[in-house]
Image (cartoon, rainbow, N blue to C red; front, side, top):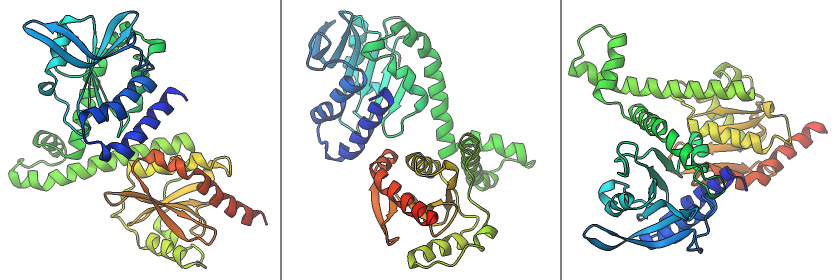
Length: 371
């Protein structure tokens, strides 16, 4: 498999199994060792490449151990310290990692709980591990822009100089992106005040702050959705959801479940926001069935309770429903009688498991059209 595919496969494994992991040792065996092996490409059973329970004397500290030392070109290049999956990743909980960094040749330190990986180096002071990571990988929400940088750490193309030279930019860009994401999710006072004063001429009182805080949050989310919609439409030629007026012209439904689809779509109003995850899921489905029909024939319509994926913008040709409006996500698939069955999704990549069913549904519609 390609690097990205292996990373996605591991992310799926973590999503499916993390609830069953109860100890740090289990986290290492189930998640961290596969990461070192399948993603970084090192043989975890070869002590010349991966040294478990790596020991070195650190000042007055004798016999301290760190979980793994990764060796490349006969030198320790990376240190890995593990925590139980779900545990917070802070340097207060990684004292050995901090101390070992100063007494080994390692320039890369990795703090992980099996799901999140924080990568550190020594940008601020030589041989002293920085207090903030230069790269943060979250397997529950992989940032595709970080994949090329992560690949530089793999055994086959290990490029320490390139990693270090890019680390400064990565560190600050990553921190800025996380700060922006936090503001879109839950804007603080300064963020709200900044935008409020751009559109409101009165004094920024507590009352004004309370009034504009949800407005700023909502505007930010809508802006992000619009940007995603525009970019995807440009790249893939996708049409967005049709206006409500177009829905009233839809033909009458012969099957009750399809009638319910039309009813929900007609009654949908301004309260609908198509989320980034719904758009990503839609394009995964489109990619799966693109060999069956032309991609532009696959469209989505968002409603209050779900987002419908349709063939030819026809309510009677539902390919799938995305039930993403609750804490647990489901994809609804249709059989030959157009009966819907929901399937739980713990990660969007799990949609690929239903590729055969999605293609079969499109083939049924395409066969009817050809008759």
